Amino acid sequence: MTAKQKQNELGKALWDIADSLRGAMNADSFRDYMLSFLFLRYLSSNYQESVKKELGSDYPKLDEKDKRTPLSIWYDDNPDYVEEFEAQMRKKVHYVIEPDYLWGSIAEMARTQHPDLLKTLQKGFKYIENESFGNSFKGLFSEINLDSEKLGKNYEARNAKLCTIIQKIAEGIADFDTDTDSLGDAYEYLIGQFAAGSGKKAGEFYTPQQISSILSEIVTLDAQDPKLGKKKKINRVLDFTCGSGSLLLNVKTKIEKAGGTISQIYGQEKNVTTYNLARMNMLLHGVKDSEFNIFHGDTLKNEWPLLNEMNPAKKVEFDAIVANPPFSLRWSPSETTGEDFRFKNYGLAPKSAADFAFLLHGFHFLSDEGTMAIILPHGVLFRGGAESRIREKLLKDNNIDTVIGLPSNLFFSTGIPVCILVLKKCKKEDDVLFINASDEENFAKEKRQNYLRKKDIQKILDTYQNRPEEKIERYARRVSMDEIVKNDYNLNISRYVSTAKPEPIIDLEEVHTKLVDVEERIKASREEHNSYLRELGLKEI
Image 1 (tube, rainbow, N blue to C red):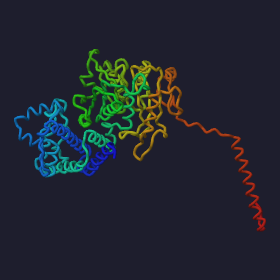
Image 2: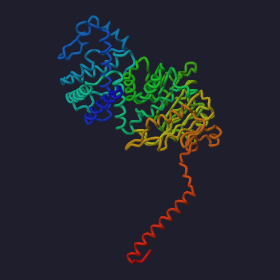
Image 3: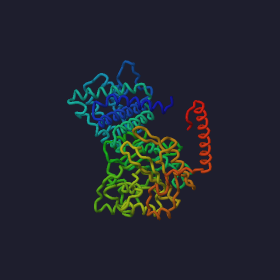
Image 4: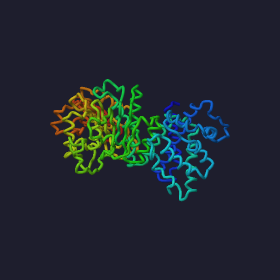
């Protein structure tokens, strides 16, 4: 079994546990409990491995029957050295967890149905939020209400339910390897499964992996000449509607697999629960708290001080920007929003659809050598009014590089077809590449969803990377700005890449030959039939 298969098996095992317990409470609440406990399991495992290396021969060895954690024994035996030890661990691992709050201690309390489990968990979560890390994880478990009636009507009932949930999780993953890659991928698997079952709410926190892969591959290619392959380094990557952070992690994975590096990851998320999921997701994938910066706030209002810097000399720019913002979100720009540095050269997106507001927000922070890939509804390609004027400005400035049309029903949250817009400030070609990946031959259908197969994704990426001079029939074409101007800056893909299948050419001579042959066979068959009728003394036909 490969490492990836083992990771998938762990994810499936956890999903089976979730499936067996999900009726116990509201689905969204259960998702948050499940993922938080998995996160605690990861933090504990990672911390204990580091402690074991740090203490070396001083790390206590316990009998199998002894259910205490080795670290708790060391703390009891070395009270005068605890403060110094924790300071050292903060330097090495960036965080500390006291023995009582380690997963092993919590799991043992669950196994024995300890009446203080709930209280201990509450203290543990507060400790991790306020004391475990330096400063990055305030409010990390703020949405996990252990006093909620969804867990039970009184303390005893809630404590008993938590014992059951934690015990099942502990038993379910006991036989699995739980290193960073395994738990990180299991976390991703669970997020995807929860998204699949949450319908429209999934759009708040999850971009399907197939689409995430396309965006991630595009922004990690050389911006000026994608044919040169992957960039060697990305200084900063941004997802300004980052959800659970999966898209950002995908960018990191793509560039590192190609031997490149990424210095810093930035994300912004408005929903506080999802914001917490994103921070957990980063840590679960081995990203140190010093290597990422996730901000909780409204992107359209630009509430992030880092991005709201009025001094152009201090403007933060990003080499790669990816985004899957909410489609056609209604927004309420104020009277002064039109003077916002993100919008003033383009105009405001209409109140009925903030799609271009999101696009312009990200594009403002794109570096001259960067690439931005954003998922938007097809309406941005052809709608009139303010959107038409924004689209025209971007095209005149030669900032729209590629338009990729995707099939409908790819998302859990909506069935509408979407497109990917690729934007650059360093674009050297004076045309726009159109890729029509929405035809039936370019995706597969399942009962609930359509999906892009590996070959479909690779076809999109190969076409983008190679930007062929000659059109690919019914699939892709480079379109000159002159032609786009003649179409009033309308980017509707069907105007440039026809999806109609050509009528078959009929060979009249071949058809005539076949008809003559059919006539001859009919004549021969009739004559044979009549010979039988004559023998029988019957009337011929």
